Image (cartoon, rainbow, N blue to C red; front, side):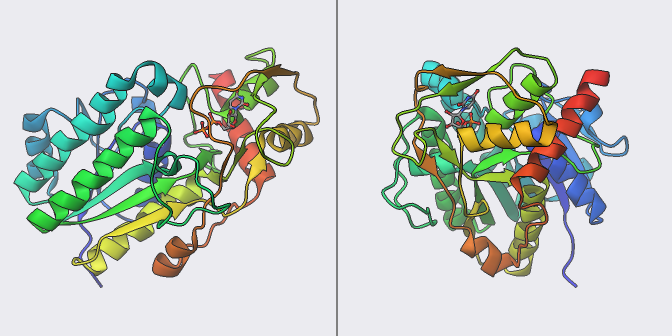
Length: 331
Ligand code: UDP
C-alpha cells in the first residue's frame, strides 16, 4: 500500500472544500484546512480537523502549516467562483484565483510538497463547437473567471515540469447538491448558482427564480449545464490523489461531470417535481459571460481513476440540496 500523505485543503471551510474534507476523513486520510472564512464557515468542518484561519498568500503561515501538519499533498479549492462577478470585477479574480495561487504554488515548491490538486472549471473551454467537451477541446475562455483558472493550470504545468512535483487539474462542470447525511452543504449568502437559487425559492427565502436568456441555441432556448453531485466530485478528488501518489511522475487533467446536460427549464421542472410545488419563474435577459451549453466528456476520469458516480440523478441532487437548505433555515 502506498504511503498516505497528510493533505492541506485550501478553502476547506467552503462548499466543495468541506465535502472534500469529509470524504478524506471518511476514507481515513489526515487533513488540515486553511481558509480565510470570507465565504466559508468554521462550523462546516468536523471538530477534529485543524483549521488555520488565514490567507493562502500568507507564505509564512503556509510554511508553518506544512511543518506542523507534515503536509504531503495540497487540494486547492480557495478562490472566487461567480462568472458574472468576474466580468464586473476581473482583477478580483486575477488576484484571488491567479495571483494567490501563484503564491501558494511557490510556497509548495519551497517546501517540496510532492502532490497538488487544483479546482479548475469547465469555463476554461469557453464556447466550444463540440457538444461534449473532452480535456483536449481547445481552451478559449469567454469570461475572466475561466481565464483566471486557466492561467493557474498553466502555472502548475510549468512549475511541475521545473520543480518535479505532480499535479491534477480537475475541471468541474456545475457542482450542486449536498452531503447526503446533511453534515455540510452550500451555505454562503447571496447565492447565484441555479440549483441553490431554486432551493432558496422553494423554501421561501426568495420569491422567484429568474431564467437568464431564452434564445440560446439549445433544445428549449435556456442554458444547458452538466450538474454533478458535490459528493461525487469530492470522491473524484480522493481518487485523483491516489493516482498522483501511485504514479509520482504522472500529472493529469480531468473533466468532472456526468456527460449529460439539463436546461434551466428542466432543472426548475425537477425542483417543482421534488418539492411538489411550483416555483415562480421570471424570464430575464441573458447574463454576461454565459455560454449556451457545457457538458463533460468524463471518460478520462472514469478510465484513469475508476470513478463511478453514486448520485448521477438530477432529482437526487436537488433532494439533497433541499435537505440542506431546510437545515439552514432551521438554524
Ligand atoms: N441561471 C438562471 N437563473 C439563475 C441562475 C442561473 O437562469 O438564477 C442559469 C445560467 O444562465 C446558466 C445556468 O443557469 O445557464 C447555470 O448557471 P450557474 O450560475 O448555476 O452556473 P455557471 O454555469 O454560470 O457556472
